[in-house]
Structure formats: structure tokens, C-alpha cells
Length: 122
Ligand code: AMP
Ligand code: ZN
View 1 (cartoon, rainbow, N blue to C red):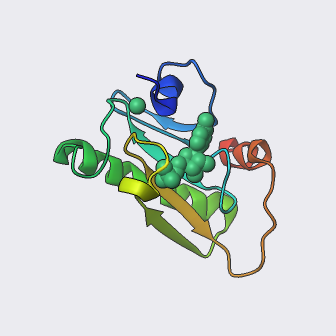
View 2: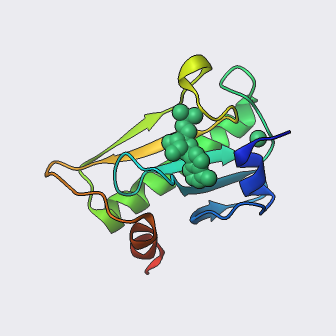
């Protein structure tokens, strides 16, 4: 299957990894809408919200809460939006949850590697 997110999971394509366990992976979006824009994906290829099982979905949202806290603490964002696209609005047909920080003040997009460095620091 020619799925870009499966390739990231298999290590064929690099990513700015924020979290990984046996079943899910979180990494920074390569073309972010805002600084810290993160994607959370299951390691198994599910297409969309209708395809994915409830247990994996619950786990994704548990970890999404932790990532939300991390983005707030490290990037000092003022809000967080969760988005999950399906059908024609979904570009990559491998289930993914977008976690998008929101900033009250205009915040210029920084290089993804710079944002990653901030998130990686203790
Ligand atoms: P969607 O429209 O919900 O399918 O969004 C797909 C998202 O995946 C977009 O925000 C892309 O910028 C992002 N994306 C595509 N390829 C990569 C990649 N190699 N690494 C990180 N993010 C990616
Ligand atoms: Zn896939």
C-alpha cells in the first residue's frame, strides 16, 4: 500500500516524533497551520473514523490530552483545536487526529525543526 503515514511508521520516511508506543505515533505536521501542529496516528492502517476501533480511538484521545498539555506548557498557546478529516477533505487516507495550537497574538510560523527543539527540551 502506498500510504505516506504507513511509511513514517515503518521508518521509510523521517518525522519529528513527539510520542510513540506499541499502537500509536504522534509527530509534527510537516506543513503546519500553526506552531506545534501535531498529528496522532494509529500504527495499524485504518482509513477513517468509521474504520478505526473504539479501543484505539480512546487511546488516541488519552494521548491527545497529554500532548495538549505539553503544547500548552512548552509553546504557551492559548487554545487547542482537534480536527479529524474524512472523505474528500481527508488528504491522507490513514486515520489521523490533528492537534492544532491556537495563539491569541499573531504568531509567525517557525521552522518545524525549531518548534520540535522547543518541545524536546525538558
Ligand atoms: P488531512 O487533510 O487531514 O488528510 O491532512 C493531512 C496532513 O498530513 C496535512 O496537514 C499534511 O501537511 C500532513 N502531512 C503530509 N505528509 C506529511 C509528512 N511526511 N510528515 C508530516 N506531516 C505530513
Ligand atoms: Zn497507512
